[in-house]
Image 1 (cartoon, helix red, strand yellow):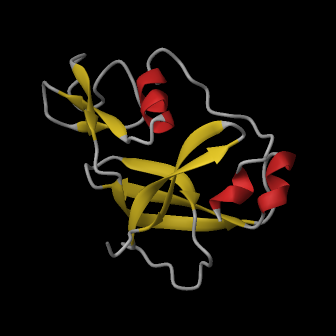
Image 2 (spheres, rainbow, N blue to C red):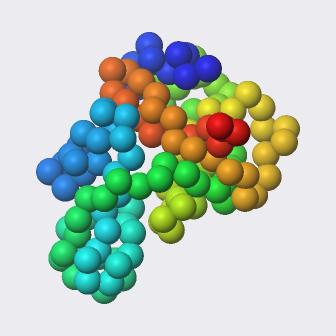
Length: 141
């Protein structure tokens, strides 16, 4: 299913000096998040200050890549014309096992049996020559 994204010519992520470690890890098929050493909170999206305690002691730590579905929607009319080739597609908000939430593509065959709390795992998907962290069902392995 994820092969359908590889040939899309769509805008990629905006990679900054702050977010570069996240995207570098994704390119290596690793899932890293920031963690504040002052208050011990996990953080997403990458930033320079902790949104919980305003500390600046943030470290990159390997994360589980596991999540649970909080909500989802099916896109039939994409905001950018290049996404039309893969419509309809599912977007979801997932709660990462470490705590933060993240908006992502859901690589699922159907939305028929989606439910809040569905266990998911990160799936590294190439999209327009950039690796992206999309999510799929947690495997039984």
